[in-house]
Length: 193
Length: 193
DNA sequence: GTCTATAGCGCGATAGAC
DNA sequence: GTCTATCGCGCTATAGAC
Picture 1 (cartoon, rainbow over the protein chains, first blue to last red):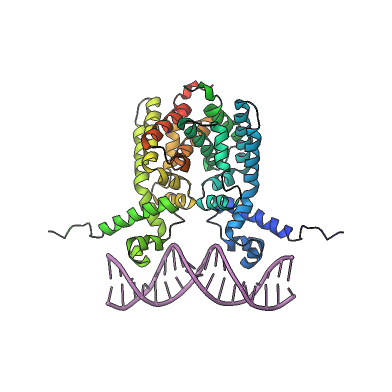
Picture 2 (cartoon, chains in turn cyan, orange, brown, purple):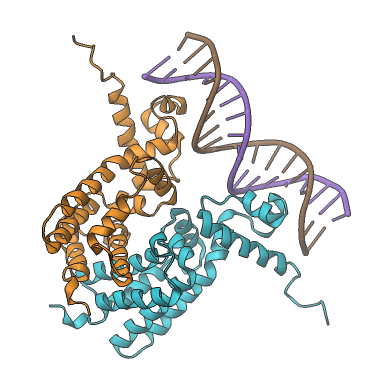
C-alpha cells in the first residue's frame, strides 16, 4: 500500500505550477502573465501546463482558491459571533490578516478584471462571498451610508496592501495601521445618527 | 479660409473614436475591449483605428487624459489653499466629484493593471500625480499611520464609485455618502494621538 | 499518466495600395 | 483617411510519443 492512494503523483507538478503562477501573478498581474511564461519558468511546454489545467481561468481560480476559502471561513466565523461588535472585530482582524499575508496578490485579485471574472464564474458559491462579507460588516438591512462606508473600507484595505508606497512597511506595522484605520471607520456603528 | 486651419478635419473621427472607446472600456474594462470591438462599433476596420492612434495604450491614455488632467488640477488647487483643513476639504470634494462623474471608469482606471501601466508610462508627469494626491491629503512628512489612512480612503472611494452594489444609488446620494465617509477618515487629523 | 509537437483562431501591430 | 494583407504572439485544442 505504498503507491495506491487516491491522490495521484501529479500533485507535485500541479503544486509547483500553482506556486509559479502565484509568483508570476504577483509580479505581472494575471492578464500580464502568459501561459508561456509559466511554462518557461517550470521548464516545460505550454501543452504540459494545459495538461494540468484546461484554461487559464482554471489556473487563476486555483491560485485564488485558498484566499477565497479563507475569506469565506472568516466571514462565517464572524457571523457566528454573538455580539455585533465582536462580529465586526472578528471580520476586520481576519480580513486585514489575509490582506497583509498576501499583500500584492490581494490587490491583484481585488482589482484585476480578468481575475474577478474567473473567480466569480467558477468558485461554486457564485461569487456571493463579497456580498456576504459586506453584510457582516454593514449588518442586516443596512442603509446606504453604512453600505458605502463598508465598501470604501474593504476595497481600500485590499488595494492598500499592495500599494508600492507602502512596500517598505513591515507586515506587523502595516497590519496595525490597517486595523486602526478600519476600526475608526466601523468600530462603533452606533455612534452614527 | 474655410478649410485651412491647423486643426485637421480628423478631429471629428478621433473624437467619435474616443467616445466609443470610453463607452466600451466602461463596460468590458480596458483589457476586455479589443481594437476590433472599437472598429466594429465605429463601422471601420482595425487599420483605420490605427491611423488615429499608434497603439492601444495611446487610446487608453487619451481616454484617461481628461480625468487625469482634472485630478492634477484639483491637486494643485487644493495645495494652493492656505489652511490644511481647506486643502483637505478642497481635495476631497474634488476627488469625490470626479469619481461620481465617472463612476465605472474611475474604478476601471484605478484598478485595471493595463491602464495603470499605460497612464503611468505616458502622461508625461511620469505618474507622480498619485503621489502628489496622497501628499496633499497626508500632509508634508506624513507618518505611516497617516499614509495608510490616506491610501485606504482614496483607493476605497475610487473603487466604490464603480461598485455594482451601489449602481442603483443616484449620483447626489453617492457623492454625499462618499464625502461623509472620507471626512470621517481625514477631516480632523489633529484628533489623532 | 505525463508530456511534446503542432495547428487553429483572435488580437495587437505594421506595410503598403487606393 | 481608409482599406487589404500579413506578421507574431497568446489561448486553446488535439494527436500522439514515452
